[in-house]
Image (cartoon, rainbow, N blue to C red; front, side):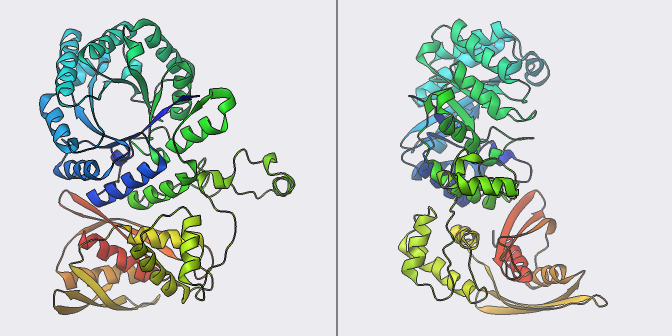
Length: 496
């Protein structure tokens, strides 16, 4: 079977999802999980976009050994130099440069002629080639580019030394037959195309990103650019988990393989959801909470008699765990450690001990700790901040006919600060008290609360987003007490 290369853009295009902002440590944690997943290329970011993006890409380049680390750059020397500076220490590195080629983009955005575009493509791909051996070029808005001109652009990039040509459906306008035909036309009409890898990058504006990507590989593309949970600009990108499981499940149709360890898909999906604050919809294909759930009596009966009646893949094949091993306060570290391995986690001994301590604390509050609870505990401790402020204790009083009041004790350096404040409800009161104690002033622009598991003792996860001037920071907190989870989330954001 021929291999399809999986190019993950979660950390670049995925981070362009409205409301998403990842710091360098969070990016590295996701990159490590993508490497374990078996992703061929990790697009680590757009180094020219900001200092933070540059540092994130550089950190990934220094730590990732097996996957290619890719940096995006516009087709200009400054961007390409910045991209190279970020990835130059990577074991395997690639520069991905792009320039718009559709008439509408050239006229209104670039204000360049076709001849100027061709000249720029040749110069910038050639220049990138002097820095790295592996150069990818994308004609932005390729699916809306006049075909004969697109062929010329691609031939120019090949002559300049490109090793990968990526055809983007930038605005998600194509249909599967149309996009597959575009790739077929490129295969038949571009000189030298047999010497490079054809890649595709499909957006989901019409809900056809995955279908277009699959049509493209059938027509000759051998790399698919996608993002975990389908994250990305506007309606997002082709979803990595859907692409990979379609290829895996329908080998009879596609006849291809990938190097993705599919049993780690759910783990990576959960990690990305946690760090980005973008929840996975329950009915999401492959990784949604309902993906392997059956409520209809007819369906339940069928699955019990023969799983294949209503399940075309097993939950275990993507990392869901079906057995119901009960873990509680009497469970030992060895059983807990083995259970973590079954869930797909490969943690250091230090991390196991740290998570086990948190597990025992939670088990004292809950009769039964679910796999989702454990997953939340691991995610909560994955990225540690430099804690300038530490919440020592809090007290809240509230009622339907009185103003809510909160008292907090916060450690700052060698001292303890105690403050109180009122608010419109207990969460607002404790946020006001924290703000007063820390003498900080931020605008709360988002607050989300979700239940990790079910029952009255469910673990709650709170995500807050704070803003001051142009800076936005995401904070998270987990607890069986939603007020405590809220306070921890606010403190987490402040420390960031």
